[in-house]
Length: 208
Image (cartoon, rainbow, N blue to C red; front, side, top):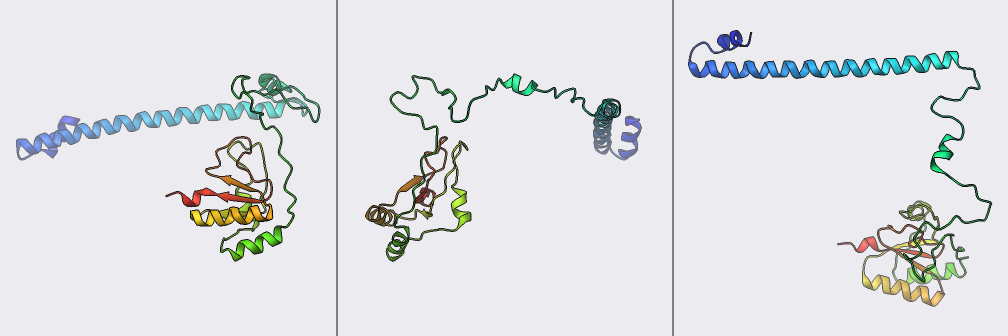
């Protein structure tokens, strides 16, 4: 077959005959690959059909209260070995005792700053030319960190643009006793870069 195709494609000169035979060999390889792919697709379809038939049969024959054969009650809890704790009891710390010597691990969110003197602080910050973002979508972006175990909401967000802007913010915050939480990439895992009230200073604006 390949030889006859090559001969028909290559009538005329030895060079054209060789090119025709190479083309015929490529066509043969492509045919074999496509045949193998078709067999794989047919096999997968057969496996899916068999699995669907078994599940349908289980739905038709099993009683309404019967558990799923692969989801027996309590099996997931037993596999992961989750212990039940009373309300207000903290689980044991998974960090090694020698990993954080003399450093208390934060396991609960601190109290949120109540916001005393916030309107006066906002007015003073605007007078110093620092932009303060107070809309909910912007503040919600910084509600948690990479750990996802702590959540807090700042009263406002300042995106750092220059050293002078940061200095003006800190001076105004110190004068009005407003807490400022500094955040970089938000890669902390226990809420260290989350603002529980006050101002969140986003330093990514100075990444150049």
